[in-house]
Image 1 (tube, helix red, strand yellow):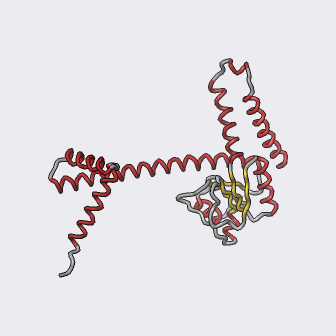
Image 2 (cartoon, helix red, strand yellow):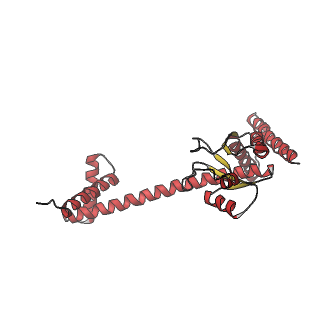
Image 3 (cartoon, helix red, strand yellow):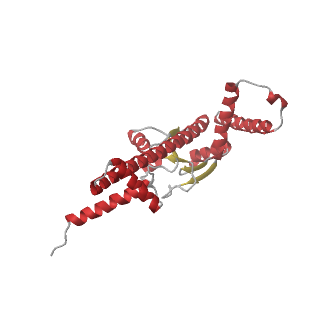
Length: 247
């Protein structure tokens, strides 16, 4: 039964290849208008499938029949798969998805170094049964998806798509948050530097900004960098005044 399901997936992927090749050939009928909603969805699915076959996957599994079946199925999908056990100290550069056998690392106390706050790839947990320790470890690892054993082939493709897509969206959100945090800090630095200039030179807010801007142009740097330098110099001066040398 499992082999039949796998064969259907492979046939579906091959059919997608055939569709792509045919779409690249001239087709007069393609010039006829068609509904945008009907055309957009198949192309979207096709793009997702092509992305799956470009994924570089690291399978962390001790082997055996289950590991072999999973490896064979990933190869049928067309992914670039490498298998390793025990888990390496660091995930190889360029890895898109990591599949980890959770029970083996929990029961065998096998080290698995994974940065939950800044993961380098999406993570899929492989579990063969559920107990509090297994579930807790899956949650602590921040897995984007779970593959259950015994293997159900039709769930693997969906899990790969979901985990890779969710990881990419999360990564973009983190980058956006980092940029916003950096911009907020820069705005605070400019405001603090202007306050220092106002207190030091006895000028108004607008004049303080113009002085800061003029200094930045002279130094050929950004206003944010100049503001940070002024704050640092002010801190050093304040430390010098509070810690007077002994006579």
